[in-house]
Image (tube, rainbow, N blue to C red; front, top):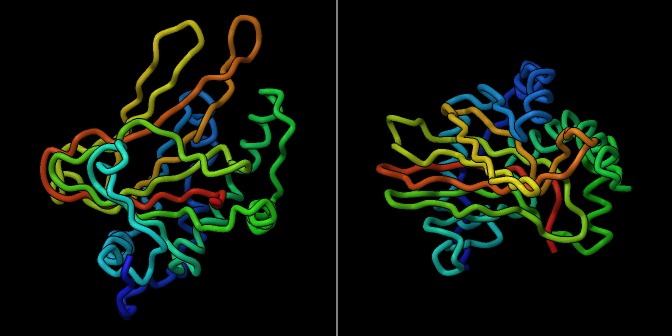
Length: 249
């Protein structure tokens, strides 16, 4: 991918980024993740922050690679992986969101009999990824036009996987686009799959399970497998930021 000169357009870190994360009802979010596998984080970003992040898409200098979904059978649309250093706003959000989710991640692993535990600080977890050769940043910016969609998938990039991730809607439904709903499916053993459609407003985020999560059954806990995607965009243009906490090989 040919890089262009960097523009002066950069997400400006908001002094209330920490306050916005702290203002989320995390008790409700953790409960929703436990019961549904996903949780809406309302008004995580301001409209101005959303527009500024979306406006980065044409400038290849911010990104390490571009993926056209149709070439790989992923759906229709495209996305770009950010390069290090990440835009300031994403670099601020990533460790703050991780800190809010790491306790749940460790509890889920304990419940599912998985020996892996995650350190309290995101920096320490990234060091674990990098020591294993997973050094490429995974936060990404997705762009959809009319008729585009994202097939159900999981964002697994190597041996070290943090079991939760966050997607932030940057565009305004009803004004910028129609359709394009976030969809989560849950494959339950010996049962039919369950689908969850998550309505989001501009600046809202959805936290969700990357791979699997524990569910209470009549004989104890069992694992369910999750995939996520985006339904067909009926009109307009839609941008989303994906915040993935593990890096890739």
